[in-house]
Image (tube, rainbow, N blue to C red; front, side, top):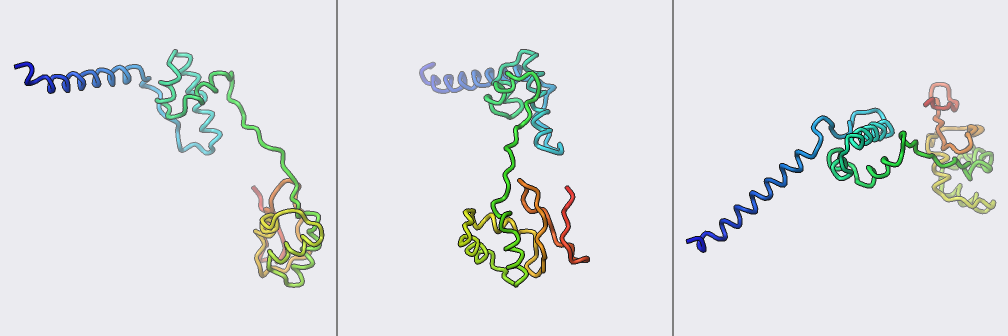
Length: 178
């Protein structure tokens, strides 16, 4: 009679083992800590919060795997945070000056003459030993309306893309405040 129900017994035993294993995992996970808060104002603030939660859970003795699962982050992130005493600030690359800046007077002159084809302006710059890409020239003009008469082009800070926009009421160039 047992031979008849052998397959059913094996299935029931596997289901019971799975249920017990899930219960162990739930018991091992901390109940008071939740995942990262998405509504924080910046990604850096979110990462700092996750870092603090990781450090708190590590101090309570939870494994890297359990912390990663609970906070929904990678195990490598948990292990990396383990090595830091305080939140590691992200390093930013040094800013670079635009390759278009040495040619801005020429570009202002050609723009004043009515040339609005950026690719044509780029070709003209290439003949004057410009080694940058057409994309750099596009970015240089990206916030200036095609119908704007500009003389001269605004001064750009080294390492920053063009953040200037045409002030349509006054007809002059102004810098956006961040």
